[in-house]
Length: 367
Image (cartoon, rainbow, N blue to C red; front, side, top):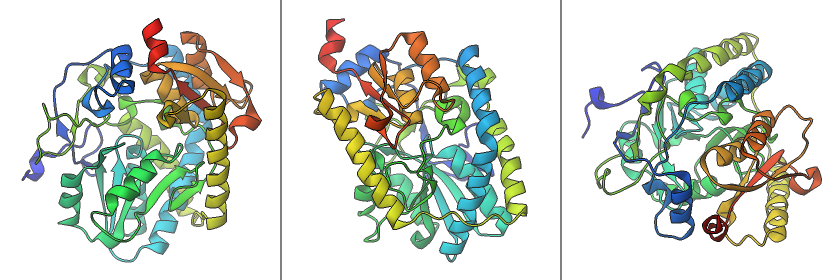
């Protein structure tokens, strides 16, 4: 069993988060080899990691524009979510942020709930598609905190793959459905969301440099044993580019203003969920039908997921709602930089502003 001194907080303030992750060393694999191994079924994506490069200046300029446009909204929505959580949960509150996209939101929610006066703890926990949630991390949390106040935090929902994974994994711990909290829920799968809009959440378009310098989680028997938490690589070579603490500190100034003005609680109704579930399903099916996609994991909907897919995967096509919209600016930058084909088809992809289709492995092999 780990002692508290062995736990990590990445590059966040230690009071903001405890990552239930094991620091590991792994040799990075190039993106094309990784993609071929994933799609051929030779290896699961969680067994490998690709090297993460520093964001180039032009991309960071777009991120800074996204911050200017979206930090105040994110701050308000964090405050509204915190008010709603406080109203709905009696007793101690425990936030389990899904690594990595949930972490910045979880840090801010932890601060907001503490400011409201609630008993709250915050952990970063791994969940991996087709592998489930980290059982050792879950047991660590539930040995210390009541399950009734456990909330899972993610930045947004894409097409619902992680939501489904969470629901299936959580059955091992409770007969009650897990409570997922997000900023944006375009696919209608969250227990609580600030909205269903697919908008440019600033932290959604960066990787480790806004997530405590940790990689996405790793589950590889060569570096993680049965008693270990899921693994992570710390990208120390990006230290000069790290803005994790600065990002949450900046958004936090807007959250404090909203809390002090007694912003109302966020509302996310069953009707809103149902509407977004239907629209999301229809958009995914339209893309899948046009390109004869059998494996829906190749479809990455939503601005953040579509952007990350270009950064980390091998894109075949990007679908956009508009090229004049400022929201997918980072995505358009990458499309032009990497010469990725795209289509502007707003009706096809609604309620999303963007969808990236990953290349099929046979097409990669032909190149």
